Amino acid sequence: MLRILKRWLAGSRTKTSGELLEGPIPFHIAIIMDGNGRWAKKRALPRSAGHHEGMKVVRRVTKHANSLGVGILTVYAFSTENWKRPKDEVSYLMKLPAEFLNTFLPELIEENVQVRIMGDKSMLPKHTLDAVERAVNDTSQNSGMILNFALNYGSRSEILGAVQRIVDDYKNEHLQKDITEEIFADYLMSNKLKDPDLLIRTSGEMRLSNFMLWQLAYTEFWFTDVLWPDFNEKHLHEAISAYQKRGRRFGGI
Ligand code: FPP
Image (cartoon, rainbow, N blue to C red; front, top):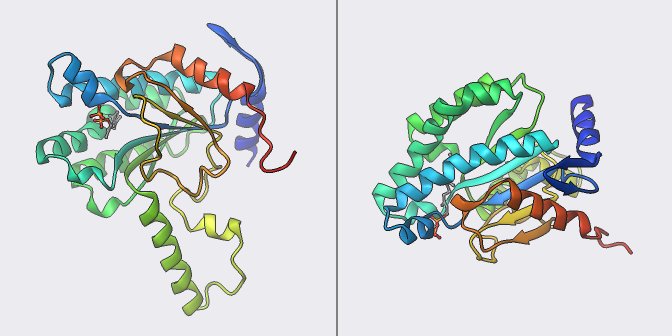
């Protein structure tokens, strides 16, 4: 709790890194990283090259967000619908977490980042799950920013799973209270994480694609035409600056 409070206070201070960032830094930033395929196509490269470049951008953005005092960075790395892609592409995307972590885990540990995973792990290939679980384990004692990978994640199935477990818990009498928003949220895959403050989607698409439907209820959205492999620190600043100009009223006045 103290750890979260310290992090939040750090994020609330005005930061000056490159262009001036005035006001609070969003505690939780969620990103729909889109446009890898188009980035590759523009360069006559295979789609895998776009994903690989996108992976490097995850590293860059993680480092920068952490230095700004962001508390949680959630990145949508693979959706439950992404299995529909050609087999080769799925298999490449499933190799990326291991490559990312094999390459960058020592630096993430040094930067005090905690790795987490949110999604249905049961369908992940063993090599993918092993790499992610090792990283989760090796960083579990870190107290810095949480890097939360949404991997084989889909919000509708997350919500259905929560409803099913609530029904089960009523039947077996583990749950006897009326369901509040807090109780429901505890059954979601994001259970212990604060809801996102800012959602970024790249590549000009303006939809949620089954991402954190419950958790994004009061999140500020920021869309950009920039393709994910071209996204950099400057764009992150633009998104945060736009967020800082929004008046968040959470339904009040
Ligand atoms: C959407 O772009 C992107 C994805 C489905 C994969 C996102 C994955 C990464 C950015 C790699 C990072 C992974 C790790 C583990 C660090 P798209 O391929 O649909 O792009 P398009 O719409 O232009 O075709």
